[in-house]
Image (cartoon, rainbow, N blue to C red; front, top):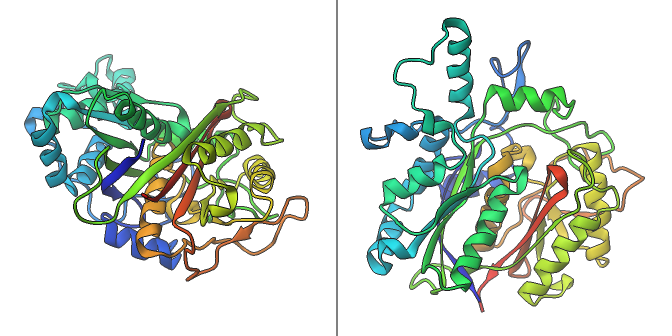
Length: 393
C-alpha cells in the first residue's frame, strides 16, 4: 500500500516553515546552533533551539496541555491547518487518527513543578498535571483538530517519530482509518541536556559526524506534522512513505551493537518493503549523531547494505539531535530534498576515521539523481528504524 505524505508542517533550528527550513538545510546552514546558559548546572551548552519567535500560547480550552512541547507542536500543525481540517470534514472525525512520537512531552514543566514542590511542599497553583504525560501531544493535537480516531504517542527514544510514521502507515493498510496526522515533537529541557551531558555524550563544539575527531552530539528541538493518506494528492508533489523497517537488537541500554546487525536488518527490511534495490536509493540521511559508537556502527552497516556506495549525510550539525522528533524531522528533510532535487550537505572537519569504511558524503549543491531516499534512526536499547521516502509511482 502506498502511504502518501500529502502535507508537511515543521519547525526547528533551521526555521519555522517549509521554505525557511529547506533554504537553510540545502545551504548547509548550522547557524541555528547556539551557546546558551541555563541548560547545565555550570557553564554554557551548545544547543539547537527553535529559530524565530516563540510559539503562541494555547487557547484556554487546551490549557491542560499548555506545555511548550505542545505549543511547538501546534505551531507546526497550524502551517497545514487547512488540509488537516479538510481531511476531518471529508473522512469524518472518527476516520482520522493522530499518532506522534516524543521523549520529553511536558518534562520541562514537570521539572519546574517538582522544583516548586521540593521548596514549598506543593505544586504551583493550577499546575496542569496532564501536560507532563507522554500522551499529551496526541491528545492536544486531536482536541485542537476535532479528530476522534485512534490517538496515541509512541516513545522509543530517538526512533519514536519513525515508529509513529510506521504505525500510521499500518493503520491505513488495515483500513482502520482514512487519514493519519503523524510526526513527532521534542523540546529542549534541562533534564535532557544535563542527562546526555552526564553520559559524556554531548560535544562542546558543533557535532562532527563521521570524523576521527567526533566527540558527541548537540541537543536540539523540533516539531513535525505530516498528513498521511491512501489517496494521491490532487495538487502538489506525490511523495510517499514507500517502505519501513525496524529491529530491536537489545545489545545495550545506551550503546548500539558494534557490528551494526540491527541497523542492517532495519535498512534491508525498508528496501524490501519498498521493492527497491540498494542502488536505486539516491540519498541516505544518516542517524549520524557524531558519537564514537554510533558513527562506527552505522558506517559498517551502510557499507554492508550499500556495497557500491550511496550519497549520504548527517543533518544533525544543522538541526541538532531532536531525540523523539528526529526520525520525523529527518524524513521531512528527505521530503524537502525530493521537492528541491538537492541533497543536504554533510558538515564535518573532513578528517576521516581510518578505522571505518569510507562513505560517499554529500557535497554542497549536490543534486539528487534518483527519487528514492532513506532515513536512519537508531535509539537506546538497540531500537532501530529505517524509512524509505520517495516519489510515488
